[in-house]
Image 1: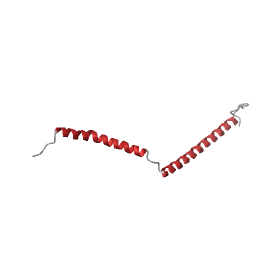
Image 2: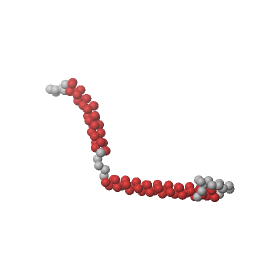
Image 3: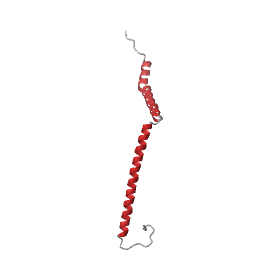
Length: 94
């Protein structure tokens, strides 16, 4: 004769399956994320980031310098081609 599980046990199992186990899994994931966030930074990763940062910084500084030189050259060419030359304009003096 097969013994049937009491109804309150079925409800408890269903509750554990649908509520408690997913909540526990979610909490475990949150704790794992926190643990990963606070773990020490790897020295190799830090060095790689440092190299990438400085190479990007140098590249950007070179671009800015080239653009500034180009703008200054364009401004000088424009002033040289003016028909009426401005007198004592501090922004246009070399």
